[in-house]
Image (cartoon, rainbow, N blue to C red):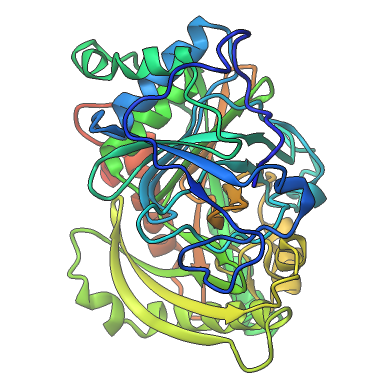
Length: 478
């Protein structure tokens, strides 16, 4: 199996020495034993039959490794790294050392064969297409996207940190680790001791009155029977001093979200500190874990499941996800293995449910995205009418917020987050953060605004020795 090597690498470093134990293993294109072999049926990805896997050992946490790699790419004038941290592909981190992320058509994102996952002994990712897809709808002001609607690129190799804290170098083409990357990784211990550069964002006041108007309009639409639930959002905008990569490293280091992701290019950057899984695909198995239902962390978690409003909010979205996946699933395979599980996220408790389905193996990711995107949890029920109304209630286009960021690997499958708690950076030094929540018939506008503040506080307060509290954040309103 091989991808065309598209990771940017300095001339002369393509054959840098490998490090650690070489665990290259064969990937059969015809096998009846998927637990010991992987299958790739697309000729574009099958020019070679081996994935190189080198054990690098304990290099430290993802912040130190990502910072060291980022410094090296900046010094060598290479495209920056892309990163997935938290819980991705059964790993703690997956980093593409240097990848050219370029604007693409929204129809071309996350394409490729549905990888089935590596042997249990490796959990390899290898590489793949990494990028993002923005929320498609305009805001009431009708303005275009601030950054490209979709962008991404292929990486032939990744650094993967397993759940035991060990790092691995993996290459789809079997190429050894590049000299520049090996040199950068040798500095990770030293980089921890060096002062980390800070990225500062001076946030402007958020528009509480506009959010309140949106919530009241949504309640009116619910009363009229147009929708049963809709996600109403607001935005924080700010000016940036420093590097978006440093913002992301500080953000996931402080808040430890489970589905954080970073991609950047000449168009700007996306720093997603999301806790939510949009889609995971392994061969024919598809999983989605929508989040709906929120209380601040200082509230007892049991109060979430005791709240009729929060429970109803979650169950309605679970039904919508079941409907979305059912559009492409094999009949009778849509199930709900988890319902109303209380889990912590930065600053809040969430209710999380999980929906699973089987789709035909030959079904492309584009069909799955057509059925399920934008994610159910950030739209409403019924989805089409909710989206139409949201575009009237919200003044500004959401952009990458409420879209998705992730990786499609021909080895490990595809995993995508819901791009909530996500900051969008343009090239003019501007940053935008969206926050919002689901509105039901029992919603109170003041409580919904407080929920937005709780969600934004851990992010809008970065970087800081102490995190911004909702009380402090409440002063940033107009």
